[in-house]
Length: 263
Image (cartoon, rainbow, N blue to C red):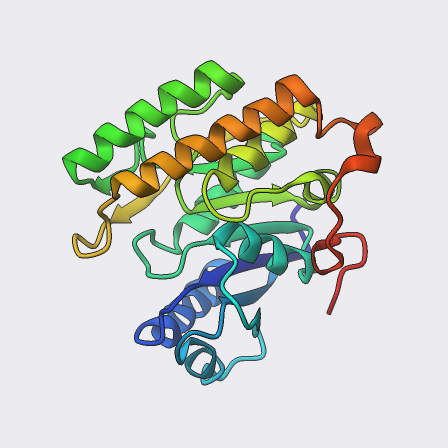
């Protein structure tokens, strides 16, 4: 059965030069590509650090809503902040910047229906994906994939692409448990979903055109991501932090309470 509403979360950090064009592009593609489903686009401004919010609000469409907060908190926080304010039967997130084509959303939705999946992950390493991929970033991706597969047993070749789609019932269970605000947010969401028996996680092809000016990864970022990933493993396998019986110890943030569905 086709969903009645798709929510697309677009986290935006210091993107005043491109965010208006990005949102208009996403809106145009969804309006043309979604025939049996309505949609909403929620742009989350991850900190009022420049004119991103002002530029995003210039988009003239009832489908686009702009939300956010004053201080930068990281992509993981921004994605969850938007998800809490979503209403869709399916909830997706897509990185701003348009390295990843928004057309991939329709492909992910098709895979969701074909496999009756809980989660569909856009994968740069899918054999049908079209990717312009710098060698060092590819090398990093392969290494990180090997590490996460060893730690979490996720049936995926790419956990880090900035496009994924979730059934709402998955998020209702998973979101209240999550902690990662910046690095390794994707791995935490996927590993906790698998832990909670939402194991129908599959990959779909995407189209990626990396901007060489912004696609580099520093050693500092690599270290922080590895550290965050190990912390997720420790909470998952050692502390059993994410398990139901440990709910009294979950860190509660009313801004991220999915059950409240803040509007």
